[in-house]
Length: 353
Image 1: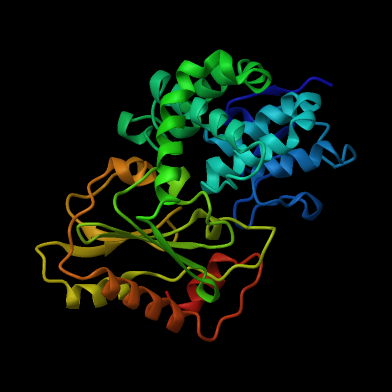
Image 2 (image 1 turned 30 degrees about the vertical axis):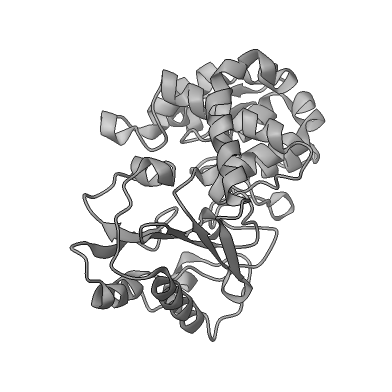
């Protein structure tokens, strides 16, 4: 059986497998989105992982559909779609694809893994070609286009080319190497003597004291098992982020629910003496940020690497910000036990939002 990709708008024209998305009329949904109708046996941390599981369970109802779609383009969703279209090659490279999908969605990667470098190369190639030939992630609205329509052009370009770079990444070295080297340099810096990491396991918080902002792949790479990252940079510049791991249905481990950050922002504003004010993204944003606000950032800018956006100087010492963040999370989670598959209603109920 030969599967093929269709734009999301064509979902109901034929039996269709929906990847990393949800849609009425799907023959089969393979997505880690919260509440998605992914069969229980196929649940995985990433949508690509669910697709790979499905390929090993050929009797899965709906898997006989030949059309495959997604309502957006990102690394995880693309790998899931590509795997369904190239099942034998996908299963031969399953571990590499899983690593790459996780890096793309959660920005997590075990740098000691033997396939870590190749996973980073694939992700950097996808990122570089996407930006050069099309537009950056979350950039469709700025161009007055719908993501589900515009992303079909990306799939059409990438799908026939991905097998080649999996088999021989060096043929596209000139494309992936600039970002790859930038990430590797940042990884080395974070492992150096000027960086200090503190883990607060009970509240799933990593605190990174490091001189300057770095790419997400370096910053979040070694944070598997944690859902909050507080970055404390020189010059009293700070950001707190709730990772994407709490937006989706994470299969591999229980999580604590997100907490709305408005109260923490208000507390920091009571202490803040600079001209800037602390502000936070909403609870259901894919990766809510708490930071000193200058001009409003677009979603594309917030999704882009921290070293590519302005981070403003606070009047507060790093120790004060760390103390306030830890205190806020400890109080917020005092009576809550981790679990899998939180609903948004349950998340909101935790904080009466």
